[in-house]
Image (tube, rainbow, N blue to C red; front, top):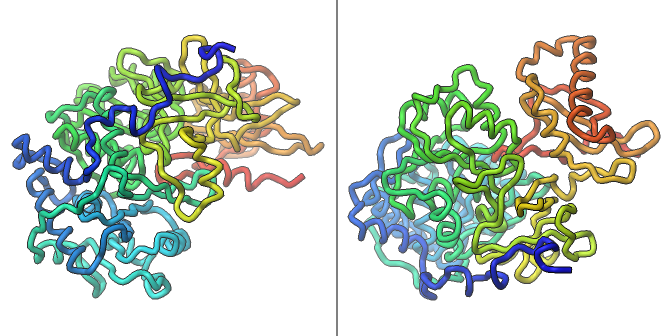
Length: 543
């Protein structure tokens, strides 16, 4: 079968660190020293790099804070390759701690700020972090864990109250800047990111210094075209791989400015932020775009300065993309990335947007779709997406079994099911574990969710496998309505269910319609906005 018909998409050989625009990265390389040094050499010391609730922070001020944090780490006796767990909300302290670790050759381990105490217990033990840097508001979740972790020696608290421990700002202010850079190489381990948990227990994906620059070389620069005059804001937080590129790697690579919001974003809080700051590059996830469009307080087009909008995390529903363009006049560039690949590797791009698809492979990455036998499937057939590219994680820390099943030589398994259409665009079908087999035929939950989302009363929906009275798998939908008063009683719920079922039947093959519809005020999500379908599946009756 010809290569072009088997869903192996690459312009040349499978890319890796040696072939995909890595010529500009020398072997002796430290990302923090590079990104800070470039901006200072470009004369941007006095230019704003970040804006947070405490004020405006220039590139010069950030470089100074990073050098001081390097001194703090060395004074505390933290050595190269040892780990620092970073549990910080999005303020200037996040890039200070993250870049300070990298510059010192210390491994940064940023973690999700919305996890449970049990999650943090696991991460502290798994990483064997010697230092914890934690926001004051998050400290109570760690307080009981400190004495349980024999490897943890120092706790630094960011905020006004340090709970009797070392205070981040106090240490920074008292330290003498240390401008020395650890003699790292491009393949030195720089940081870990724990997976978001959309499919269960987190895994620590290990990344090297070169990975950060490569995400900008391959995606950030060519696809977003950020300049030093841009102002960026990312709904996805810095601890998320998507947010790390959005709010740190890409804007800093161009000398742009990023606005940080410490609190969890809501349509109202983001509306206020967009009215206060002239944000030109905006990143969010599909659920946030939908909620923003549904908000009665959302700003008008004339109030905003947006020139580029990006979506990732989950596939963007066609209806959401089109309504956003109608209201704000800017296309949403929908793409897919992963913690394992660090950022977006498959995407729509400016001037080539096809809603309902995730676009085409980002140059520098190769994509292929394979069947259960691991062989490429014909174009037009559904298969699991595998990616090859230079930013793939080295491994999952302390998890050899999962590493072996995910990192297959040059290829990385995504766990996502896709179809490639005749024009070469990739159409999302759902997660591998989310797929349903109904009457012997595969059903994509995302396809059913997309059909539900086109109904004017639906805000969002999740579809999972459910067993009927015969023990057979059928689709069940969990739906959040824009106006929940429309299902205030049993009769109203029954009527709305029938309406939505008929709506899906009018859009899709009849066997795909949800046999049951349950109305919910919200859906379980990760902190990055991904729907946790596994939690909904766990509610299903056993066979």
